[in-house]
Length: 380
Image (tube, rainbow, N blue to C red; front, top):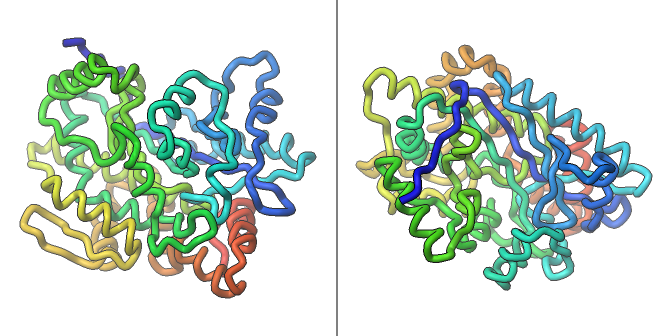
């Protein structure tokens, strides 16, 4: 069995990855121009440190450097956006983010010219070609490998909170799916995606990875696409729960909640207290409920099966995390979660625009583009 080393990382440093769609300023449809951006930012063909290629040519991922605070990570992302706009504006292309594009057709999108993407599509076929989705990934540094899996399990009772707050994919291919996050359920159709397994020991994870590589399911650890996963090469715990955020304010609010939860659970371990967790059947149900109902979801909170409306439980949770946020320097960003609760999550604002504009999904795209420019949620 091969050992999986876990890189050294400073405790509770934070990094953010934000997947962005490239849309036409006139039609709102997707544009396949990612290679133009990448070449402009790195003419020598090297990989830009903060702007990356993704599966589809209509997508760019921007990443922050490892930072002490969420605000610092956000500043990194803004710098990358400003760089890209200089390239995009002459082409009449804009940036947009949501869990899905409201009306684009998956069968009209082109895949990036990269071996690992070609392998993914060859293996997954119809499901792989449908991955016209956008997300937010948050990395939080964990200083001791022994803490990683317990914290990952400890995050499960809060999975639905993050997914509901971030839900921004009600539309797919021009239809209202009836879900708050259609992306969440689509993405889990890929092999090794979804909630993942609840391992007790690092050796259990190593055995799993060894089995997956031996049988050809994966070639590299990064092909494990769990919603919550260790990231050994960075020394972090990575959450891949959230739909794409349409604006910086919401992105930072979600990242701050994520950041505080990991630090809170890490502190609980330090104090010798047992972390809360959920049986797999409750975790799976919460994922479905939050994807379906979003901010109206009634979530299962503990092993005993106690339940509460997410908006009610969030108020108590945010109060509980305030001292942690003060310690991490993200109190302002965490407080923005209250605004999502009061003004509505992304999927709710998209539906409000859709209804106000008599079913015009190009108007929904325009509202998402406007929020990206404004850096905050806007009224429907």
